[in-house]
Image 1 (tube, chains in turn orange, red, purple, green):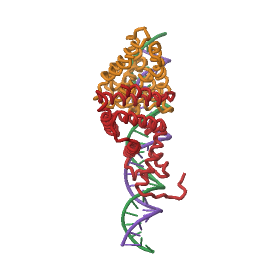
Image 2 (spheres, chains in turn cyan, orange, green, yellow):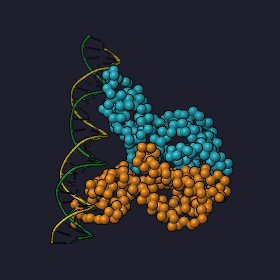
Image 3 (cartoon, rainbow over the protein chains, first blue to last red):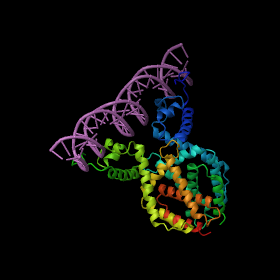
Image 4 (cartoon, rainbow over the protein chains, first blue to last red):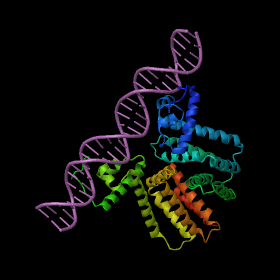
Length: 191
Length: 191
DNA sequence: TAGGTTATCTACCGTTTGGTAGATAGCGTG
DNA sequence: CACGCTATCTACCAAACGGTAGATAACCTA
């Protein structure tokens, strides 16, 4: 149990990244409330106190984990993103998300669980998810603007279906997430 | 804090029902993980130990709460249910659920949070939610059988959209749950 | 090599929580 | 009225957890 070479000292930036990475995996496997500070620390071969030197509280760690994933996702999307904000691009981006999420099921589950916990206004990540939702919807709406007569409700429809399908896929991996999405998108983007 | 007339002794069935009812309200207000055994008990004017006489553990209480709501929901649906298992009936039932859920937001939130927590196979309610999902889908599929060329995927579509829309409504009460659902259903059941 | 900075550790605290053991009292029945 | 059953209570426990205080050691620089 004791670390073999005694103490391992890292520069803060590097250590933070190591902690965030480990925490993300742990949370994805067991949810946030299922993992203790001690466990987060142990996964990096350190102690609670050591970890709390970098993140002042459990809550701060959680937020950092979320923001990190956002950054990574955003990067990946922006790379693929064609400049044109039209419906076809919107569909392509959404299909991209589906494919991406198919390959990282446990991480998707993490997000689902956290965002459900965070429905409680007192939850540390409540504001985070709310903001995120609004931004996502606004962005999608812009993409549909020139094409759909009611871009607002249309954006809600799309996001709702995607969220719901993903949720049902998490509940029952018998569902063909991608095929089901593509079929829906075919119909949706036909009109 | 002390109960005025000392001790209140109830027959088990009655007491169980009282506990379940109170627990449902508490959970709906603060989530499951946010309420302690003590709080559940206090809401009925008893102590933890007294409550644990009726439910051997916190976990057992949770399951009982879920099953009770199912029973109530089912009753309410069956009452309204016309015998014909056709698409129109399916839509009517689903609209009924939307209306019903609109009026009990916090309870819906409870279900959402619990079912997300329960994505973890180790969760006490995992099997419960999985079974529930399968039964619901099978039932809906039967209703679509005579009308839709692909009742299976259609049922998944419907449930996914409903789940997702509800989730987004919980996240942002600016969404018009009912109108958005009816518009979607109009299109879906038009073909 | 000496000294300072700080990343990390050991040890501890206070609280909360689920659960248990044994005493007590309300109710039905003989 | 006496007795037994059991619903309920009081008192307690052990474990888990988030967080803190102060000691210690790894690295950088002069």
